Image (cartoon, rainbow, N blue to C red; front, side):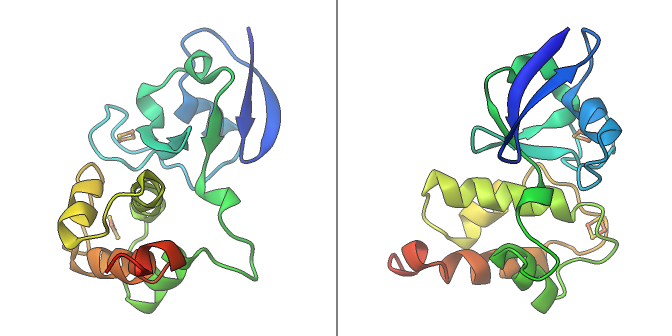
Length: 158
Ligand code: FES
Ligand code: FES
């Protein structure tokens, strides 16, 4: 079957077997920011944005994204310009092994797009589905606050 959807800003026609998960498809297509962790919706390492909402790709079939907008971390930066969340993760030392980091950044980006208030509590809620074995969450939360509070729109709310 062929499924058409938008992936990182371009239209793709994915030829997949029924039952292929979005995680399987993205890994096969070498979107390596999308990590293969638990495969059961428990770790958040496979987080992607679907129509601006953070979703576990391991629990999403490719056919379910037909006509939708899918984004992975690959579309957020170039080698020259990092996304502000990536910059703040770097500056705050918020990534250690880095396995959870793409998922965390996408969860925080989804929070930003929701237009919710950027508070520590909302940041922690946004990261609730992203398991991190290394950081204890303190630095990722600080990085999220730094990046999202300093964005032009959010900065006006504080
Ligand atoms: S690999 Fe999808 S939530 Fe763990
Ligand atoms: S930085 Fe290692 S799992 Fe989060």
